[in-house]
Image (cartoon, rainbow, N blue to C red; front, side):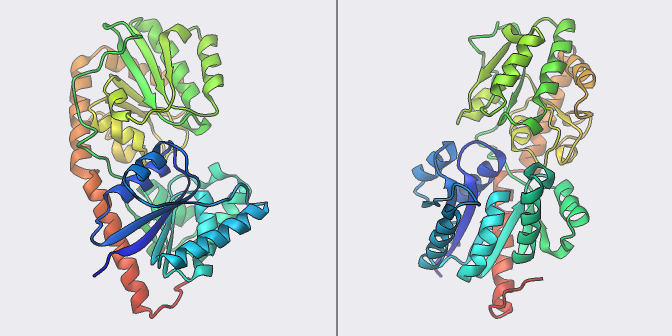
Amino acid sequence: MAPVPILLTVRELDQGGCERDLTKLALHIDRSRFEPHVACFLPDGIRGEELSRAGIPVKALPVRSFRSYSALAGAAAMRRYLRAHGIQLMQAFDVPLSVFSAPVGRWAGTPVVLTSQLSFRHLAGPMMHRLTQWSDRLADGVVVNCQAMQRHVTADEGVREDRVHLCYNGIDTALFQPRPRRRLPFFPETSLVVGEVCALRPEKGLVTLLEGFALAVRREPGLRLLLVGSGAMRERLEAEAQRLAIRELCHFEPAVSDVASWLQAIDIFVLPSLSEALSNGLMEAMACGCACIASEVGGNPELIREGETGLLFPAADAEALAARITQLTGNPQLRRTLGEAASASIRRDFSLAAYTRRMEELYTAQLAAKAARGGDRGKR
């Protein structure tokens, strides 16, 4: 039997969790069962390069704004692509493409249309929030990546429980695994490195990280701070580091494709998010054996078991974060114990193989259910 053509969509193919999730699935899904295609608005970026190297077709849609003619042109282009390639299932991985793909998929007659909710909806703004609720009604189901997001979509957004599908993210544990610490040329070899790898967005709470680090370094002068990522907040964060008199203790590295090697340079990984679903960055840091600290929001407590696989602190509380950093800097045995337990937890419960298997099972079940309904659109 020929593999089933599927289309995975996301706004852009650069850094970010949704982009990473799509790319991992496209690269590792069972090709004997599924033939992956990708569509996006902005194809340039590190994920686009990975997909191109793997020979996965990427369709760039000419959409620049939902308020312009380009949205109609992009919808027509996607409809032609869906029909020309006989796409049987389409899944959108972020809010803009959920809003865009659900109606186009219905217009094209695509048998199964899935959307995703991988972040809290208030982050998208009021208009996009309303459009996302509309896309809920058009789609066959909504994929979420943690229990916190499952509760959000059902309790806050009113989507029926049987239409919400929980599929935890997965990490390539062959790539992300504990290795000897990498020394960074711009930091003294004796320093302990506190770090984060993420897109520099407001919801990541990076000002709290700078403030917490500034407090902690007064108690532990040997600390250094590494921030890896790009985004609109770069200049503000550098200015904030200057204001806190820690700029010379910090290194800002633009977004990288070799995330694992940078995580292996971090002793204490901090995820200070104000809002979070299930963080790929946190999972990757845990897999690499970093001692991890995360804000107690969203899916973070589903990954970090307090005092066992990491430490938690109240979001936006710089004093509490500083206390957690200091707790780890003064206890190398605790850092090792937490890092080892975190890595084992990711290998056991959040592997890439488990993620792709869950998604394959979901796709198979959705296609079978659609076939059983005899092509009925299955709207609820």
